[in-house]
Image 1 (cartoon, rainbow, N blue to C red):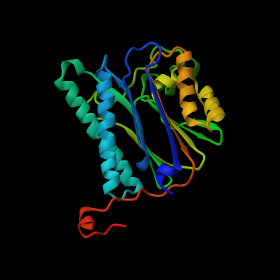
Image 2: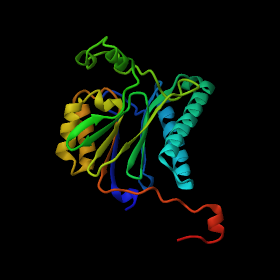
Image 3: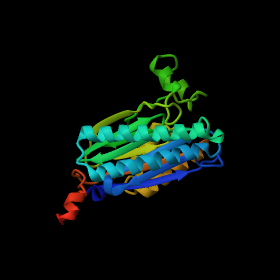
Image 4: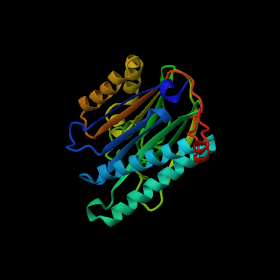
Length: 270
């Protein structure tokens, strides 16, 4: 069983109702169990540049390393951290070099499915959810002022839902010369559904209704992602909305490695 055949992936990105330009970027590589959502910020087109750079650099680097090395759990964590660091430096340097891009940055949530485990990197307020046995759980914690206020007891969860500080992040790629992301790994079970999304979804649709939509429509993932965007837009669509749904249908092995140069020269191919 390959990673591609074990996972069903459906994606969507939408400008929303209020914004005139989409600064989100999504990317997937089913053969390697890769997916990411980046939500850019920094004004017209600058956010698009930042999220696009993050997605391009991270996907290129992760695909190269996963195909050329024999990844263990600790090695995949290093790959994610290295890729995030490389993307951060590139975005930061581009922002410093161009006045129109100064201050641009992007949030990010990226996942790697490997050997029946989910590895993910996260920075900012884009989220990763898991639906398991009908129950929805947020696997990431927002790097935001609002989350810190709730954690410190300065504001209640109910007040947080209507706070004007919802979109003030405390971490993002490219804003500083050094980035600080969180990297974790979790066991995967057959039947799990994972949702990667920009805050344009969870700001407009509460977790209870996201859970209801996933439970009701999970037999049709393309319809489910469309429904999530529709719900966000029906509730105001104040931001761009991006979502990736990944359903685990079967157990999956470690990623099969490409033969190295030495092996190719001597014809050690299966």
